[in-house]
Image (tube, rainbow, N blue to C red; front, top):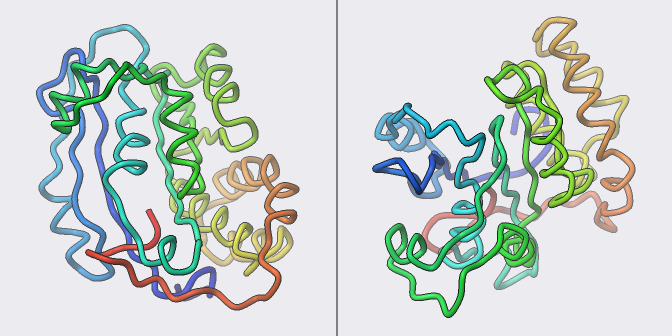
Length: 233
């Protein structure tokens, strides 16, 4: 907001686990624009454990975005929001019983992660950040799966301290409110450190070309006011 990347954003936080092993595999708050964001973050707990399969149920977030969100931005202006997942593992598909257990949804069939992402992409700009400092993040199979699902929108970041800057500047590039030179200058001003700033620049470079092609015709940024709370995730 301070740097003008986007006007009046509203944010929703969620936590993703493993629907095969965890008691709370998908925790989600509400879209907020103020201090209420902190309240939802406080209510999220880190379950830990893990099944050792190098998978988490990231596709639950894509199902949620596709089937359980509604925004004025899309319904009134056909303007997509932004959905970022992040983690260091591959994603499971979505069996019918998990959709029923987690969301109470009756699906006619199991959904693949690819299908869930495609559905979410109809109303959201979808990205995933592979954080390579995680336990599995440097394993090539992890990035290969995400690149197969999202192409250049599978972003690689070795330093988790750069996540907020990477998300903000990815949105800025797609909105047309910044270009790569401006992004680099802002990173210097953020005092993230040279290594973190360089890592964010490297990740941004993978999407910079496609972002330029997707820039809106004008520099005007739509106001983010959503039904029930939200515009951008």
